[in-house]
Length: 441
Image 1 (cartoon, rainbow, N blue to C red):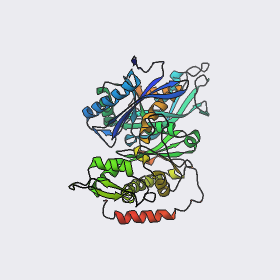
Image 2: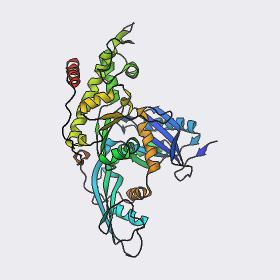
Image 3: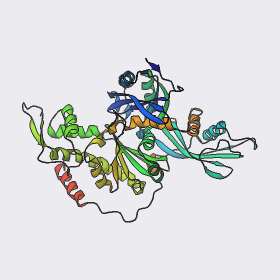
């Protein structure tokens, strides 16, 4: 029997729609007694997207419909309402502050007062090309008393809110919403992918003291900084797993389809872990018989591209001192499934690194992290956060002057003596340089 899913359904059903460059994933989860259980999954190759952005609404809508259809069949529900991911490459982050004076000193602060102070935090004029995506409350202040998480029920004259305002490209957000709506779905909420992943991936201490999440996707790589349980910084690199596949295809002179299969079946991120003795066949374009290639050779191709991506990400993280945060780095996304990825990243970023893989049945691959994070985050969002987020719909014309998220200041914890890089790093780097001295621009 099919159940009809709506936002107000007391069954506690949530549907996350993760629209990625290489694949679209739909996660249906049910929350029972505080436990989130996945009951349906859809996974469809993406069409109409480039670097996380929809460039063809019709193609994207068709791919979304197909992924939703798969999830509906497995979960035995009819999906109409979805929580949609918003990629980090369109975000800008800015501090915001709100203030309201309460007209009656004797009454308690209400949800409407909280919403009003959030609306007041949407400050000055917003550039025409941008719109508010989310507002994150960091603290409320009642009559000068700060660090209040939920002021409802308190009595005061002056209510303030400090938080983070996040905006995105109006055109990109329009195309995203249009594609979802054209697929016959209703968006009940848009959720920032890095914020949702921080909630799902990191423990309380890691969110508090500061940790970097690097999502190695197919079309791009995203690095985000979670500190004080807030998204403080996000940056994207326009290269991901697709570029690794292209490199393999070009160097080995094989088709993209073969290159992708070779990467998944035999690939290592760290060439020091791959064996030069283990060989596998590769179908070469223009040749009747396959050529045998060893795993070490393939790993050097993969490592070269990953090293370039990590170098660029590291440079941006260094600018905001994020690598000084004690939580280190957590890797996820489809490329994070490559063996040796944690060792390569730890060597290159010079900090502790771990790989996150979802533990839900049927989702035990890092490519499902974003989709699972959507439903996990939204199912746990607090009442006061929902009230504050509702202010975004009240006005989209009053927000502070914005700066690029790369200019955001990230509070850091200091580390004294940094450990020296491994001697292996020098050997690895030299091998890559010699192997690809003329390959990359």
